[in-house]
Image 1 (cartoon, rainbow, N blue to C red):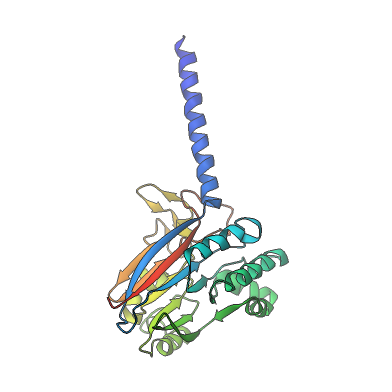
Image 2 (cartoon, one colour):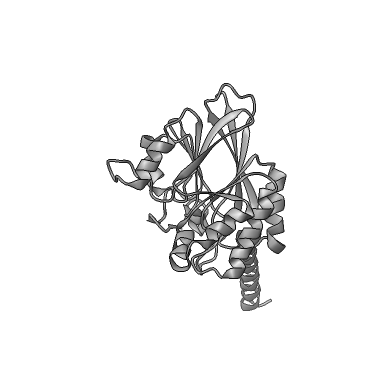
Length: 288
């Protein structure tokens, strides 16, 4: 066989293999739903039971199965005590169909466990253009909206305070305003504190979690870096730019934990890659 024929066959094989891998990875990063689990210790020696929270973030009106049946099934399989939605469940440019999809999802999930919903930048941008009716629709579907507000509850013997706030959540020496006032009030408790905060950048990149000392923060926004590369991690974060340090995972600082979800969807024309959509499962383990 002539060299040019052999080399052509090899090149064609490499192209086919590489194309197949890229195509499979693009599909997996769009539809290959995965579950990621973390265990977070809490100082609650009065409770003998753990509390399981399932976090969903950055859906951007993506659908996994008809009417998100696959997503609902994955949450059901996880067996949550609470469900936390941490913003950008639809997009600023969403139409009625997207909103109906998200409300249907909330309704289906609320039949599994209480649903707590904090706002992201896309909800705020949408409401700035279209008004606040969507909040009433989400409440009617079964969500508890947490917007600089919180709820006290007891689950499996654990006394929890679950709240939500949008913003950078900077320390008072960096900013002094409504976010800081809310956090002062939110943290004025002996209960285990769980904060739904769409953006983690202020807490992690600016180290403000050291000042607020929330027991558990659930965040999203970074989409896992959108594109994830081997040995490098996430490629881009909309707040901190290229090659960010924090794009997904669990980060522990003192007595605090920040769980950063890679999210479920995307609002950009750049596809997710090396970055499968995820639901996050957190077990609050008492007495440790």
